[in-house]
Length: 338
Image 1 (cartoon, rainbow, N blue to C red):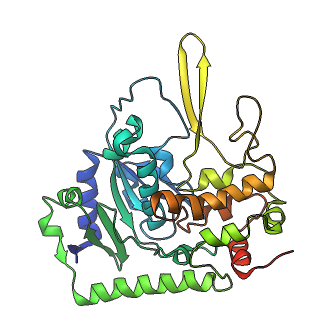
Image 2: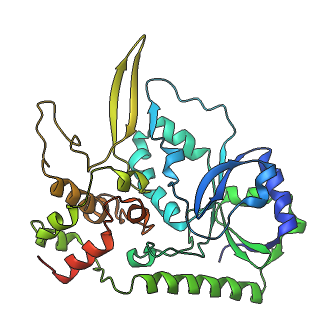
Image 3: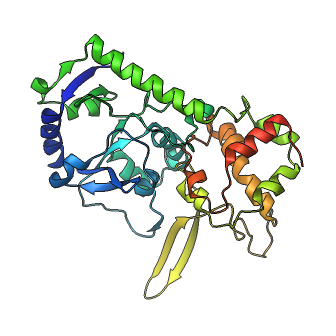
């Protein structure tokens, strides 16, 4: 088991002050009933949300901007970001984005932002009815991929070290670090178990399949694709809110100088995948609608050996047409037809 420590509130605030000298802290902040990643300074340390649910915007929005210029060198002269309060559903999505924009032929802008980012994740303790991470073999708490992970208990935090960089973040704070004792560990386990139970209870009526590749082949021409796409307005909100969607378009802009812009794209858009001659492999909305599910549950598992869905539920919350992917997946699994 990795190193775990309990840190009281007063000592934790001291650690945050130390981090703020080197990093721009981007943390979960409450706005009404929603939570957003926002840069925070010392005056807002007491307003940081550690538990609760994931933020409205996915973490990818900071690492892969919605619109950016790609024809010039990406030189970031700002402090590196320390993301605080990242939930497991966002954390797991990074491995998909890393494979798409990293590797031997990495995107320089993404690589710089990713390498300069510190990830301090935090357990989710208040899942929404739209959350379904446990149904896609995930947990509402991080198991790996973080520098540090936080579990809020009582008036302090259990801090788990997940990397060498995470260990370095705690250097010089030895007096603040107490080895986790049995009562603290049991409290953490109890909170995590209760959160898992709540997510499972919210999804008990949905019947998910163990895997979907063969199921999608069987129901390629199912009427369910048409049925569930009837209220889709092609707004792209599900794609843009999704932590793993990473399709983009390139736009050449000629003003005084040549500029190439890259922006988020959506496979629901009518113009998605349209060729120079005007042709498209998916002219019908139901076909573009189906493509998103195939991408998440068939293409990405085939290419990256992991599901392209982390069960965050953002697409459900964002959909203007009130489309719930759990209903379609459940009906496909049960062979429900019109």
